Length: 442
Image (cartoon, rainbow, N blue to C red):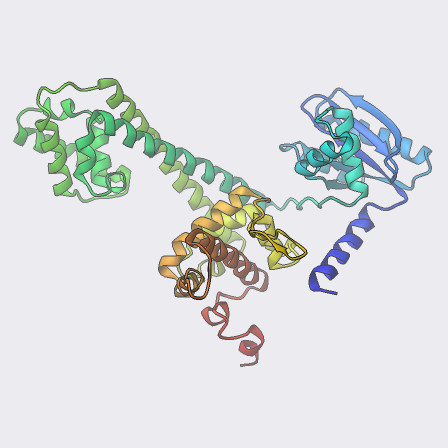
């Protein structure tokens, strides 16, 4: 048997130890104020069914009701199953743990696929979904929810917060560019990368993204003096202290060169609002990253997270925020599958189709791994060499984006080993020049 066969057999044995054949399955279709509970045997026969009009936190009565009917039907106990809907399943998990009942989760996509194969229609109801959850549970198409550890839970929430602020920052940044491109396009030419220049951002902030606010300060020299003082006060809010005089002078010149040309004041005002949104999102993102690094320190992973050249501690924290404790995975490949970066084969007999990534798992984990790998290609010689090899037409047929995906998957596998074995990243092992056993013997 292959290692995959052995891991699969072990996983099935572990799941069967929880979803025992002498236990009834209690499937709950969770909603805000309506909970459909179905008690079934292992052949999907309904033992009892009831709808409880209550919040998930009030399901203790439903659990006892289910246990009573399962005992009356001759079962030795019950196991609860539900979809991980929002955060409601956590309440069910806590209620079940209080009375000594195990809880398993069924992926919503598995329920959706089972719904389609049930009667080849798209018919959907709470009662049917509860039965499908029970059926998938008896077939062991389940997973065990991650134990709630305070630091890891906090890291996950901080990771979500950071991802939200990154999205808002990017949207506001693009809006600033779009508005100025139509209302004051020459302002964007004052710096090679204007939205990365602290002087440019501070000048736009104090002027309200409006050239008339610059020209209203007086003549060119007086306006330059007044604006320079205001920019010097504003500059620390953008993470800098020294003014780039070339950029500031270019903005002043382009403001005075407009003259009496018509200006779209509404677009400029909207650009100013977007610039404020950009600053707020950037500040909130920095705050979330600071807290994430503090959590890494509390977990004792600070040094390990910084051992991979070219991959920042923030990038590692973002990855760990999506994976949780890596020790809960059976192998490094399981982490890659969790991210949806594993290959999806398409072959049958002599036919060999195009192999792509599965695209399943956690999308934010894929994004975090992609960002980390993209940045590492510049500063990590092992990954850069691997990338050049994968994109070399003489040795490989991968396109650049496919090679980056391969690097992201390799990063996840190596991070799994680094964290679970508490061993700093080693370039010789990562490049395949030295095997871990040889290094230990040495």
